[in-house]
Image (cartoon, rainbow, N blue to C red; front, side, top):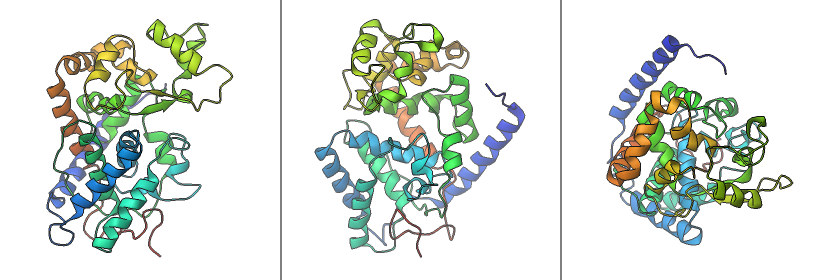
Length: 329
């Protein structure tokens, strides 16, 4: 694994954190109070319709906001079309979804208040509503972001946490953006809803790390089920619940699964099973969240607000896109 340089990493994290504090002062919960007073109702209705049609969409919309904020900050850059953009980056291609739902929300918002609301803010509100409508907490979303003009495929390939990353690598990727270990674990709890493709976890099922056997940290009965779902000859596109036996409810069951070796992704199970889990305190946090749902939901809410403040464009920076898929001409 490539060595990191703590001094440089800390400096970068401090700079980004300072920038986020300035941006936070420019964001507000009532940003659209006069320019688009029905915004929250419009977004909630469309998210509700989308989830009624497909419950998995809640996880997909939440993930879009996450993958947006980790690249170029929360600027809706993930929504831009183009073969050289973030949509085509390895962590997103054949994986990121929900773009049509954002299009529908944007269209409804534009009908009510044309040229006022950014796609970045729509993503932030839709993520909050997805959590709430799945049984999680609500929170007041800080608004006033503007949309970016470029989509950064390289940044997505290098900056987004991967299910194949080591725990120190994941923690480092969060730290660069000013997010700490508590944010790592609480935001990982978003995997309490949704599905994952076999391609993201099949490396654990048959010949893990050239051992000739499944990952030893994976529950044996779960391993058997997943081997049947994802045989060696499969195309990797079958899906399994990220939170076994509780895939649609936003709760702390995900952490209980980790304690029993039932984390689906390798990066999930590492939070408690890796050598670094003790030294970084991720194991302690998993144990705490598994027994205290309110603690998890509170920390998750705080981490979502914090993540939503990663380098947003404000003031005259960027633009308010008319179509979330393309920059204004």
